[in-house]
Length: 215
Image (cartoon, rainbow, N blue to C red):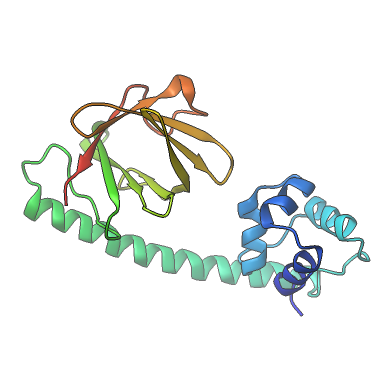
């Protein structure tokens, strides 16, 4: 039985969530999720914490030799990188194609309607690079089931996700690292980022305006 299966079984027997386990051994929930999906292995400190938490013998979760684990991890990482690059390439090509055809004169650039009923907001700015001016699109997707996805720019490899809720005239986003970001609902279907009520800058400056995408 591999680490991911043993960890799932141990957590199931304890009847605890990924978040509860993460809090107990002082790691992020996403780290536990990666271990259980076979996309990574705990570092030595985290492995010791897991063994101590579940009360198992030393090396219980590590069924492979260290060198074998590293090789397998590297193979998985390469496969993941190849798949991500392919998906990102298709995604970027689709966005650029839509932008060229439908948004040549649109200040807010292309977005992608990923699900029926999804509320899509876009913030656009220009960045000056060594290769000239680059238009960057920040896309926020609010799903009807209470989850959200935020892509900070077409060329970013990092994606925020988590839950969102209404709080008066504000929308509160909480990602899976428990960081909160506040967007104030303004007129004309716009959201204004409030850095003073947020954990971090959310990759945009204070007062950035997100405009709703009509579809």
